[in-house]
Image 1 (tube, protein in one colour):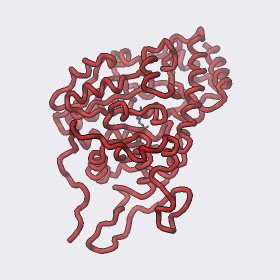
Image 2 (cartoon, protein in one colour):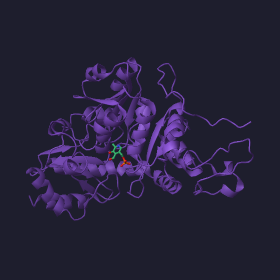
Image 3 (cartoon, protein in one colour):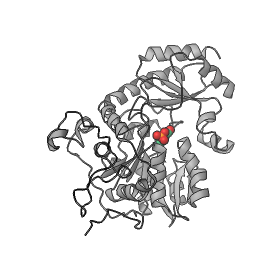
Image 4 (cartoon, rainbow, N blue to C red):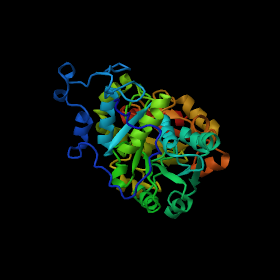
Length: 414
Ligand SMILES: Cc1ncc(COP(=O)(O)O)c(C=O)c1O
């Protein structure tokens, strides 16, 4: 008789508030050791794969040993060996039971919601979310899948989260610190409210990464990641991941990813394994450089406002110091003159590159009003802090004085 394939069109994964979360792989090892070793030990592999570097296996199908037995790896739409090493490593870094990767961070969000929500269900979130996430929440899911997204107005008001949750809430979704306004949400407090209503909490940990913030230790059940940003660190990979209970990630893998092919490719996974080795050192430098740049911008006469959790005046400063190890590499600031002012500064930078992404080793600027949050209504933009003059800055690993000098001369053009 044939083995059964692991999952097939069962009921979607359901959160069980009584279930004890698994500790995560290699929980006894330090973060940096996990970033280098989890998921791959050369001596535990067959002789031909005993390389020091995890091998990049570019095969999309895997031979059957016999008619009766499914191989561990079947076909590239479900899982492949190099990608599995990366999934184990990401699970280990976040402290989750399992991980499923995706072709992008946006796809990871889509696959998560698409797998567990059905028409009539809802997701509770806020407007402090990345642009493509907002587009999925405001239009794609409600209009095409009948899944409603409810936006909490004031994310600091924990009761506001509670008031949006009902019997059909499948997920509470928080992004902290948020892109692009660096809004900081209290993970432990929102987790408590979600759990009191029997609902799991997903935290998007893309901007902080596990090197700076551990949502699962603070009560989150699921972590959403774009691998495209700080986790890779140089804009050479597009990828995403969901870390969470084994049963959830396998539901996503076998009942969504496998059917639609929204996978991460082996080469991207292999590159990611190299990049993760330096994650915590990079995040330390991104954070210290950002602090210097944020302080410079905050004292600049032509800057009206700076969003960076490392600044004492940031509304989430105290919370960020509690729930993060450092303040990260992303900030945003407002220049006078609205869109025209932003255009003048962005057209004047020389070292800083004007491009869409963040988390790169080179400093990048981007205009959220026209590039990522253009579909928000004017009221929503006002609520989310997306001013016409807002510039997002992903502070890179250059000498901070050079970044500051470039911004200074660009601001001088205003
Ligand atoms: C916080 C956050 N999560 C997820 C994503 C989606 O990432 P990707 O570009 O890999 O789809 C982004 C993209 O900007 C983001 O800012």
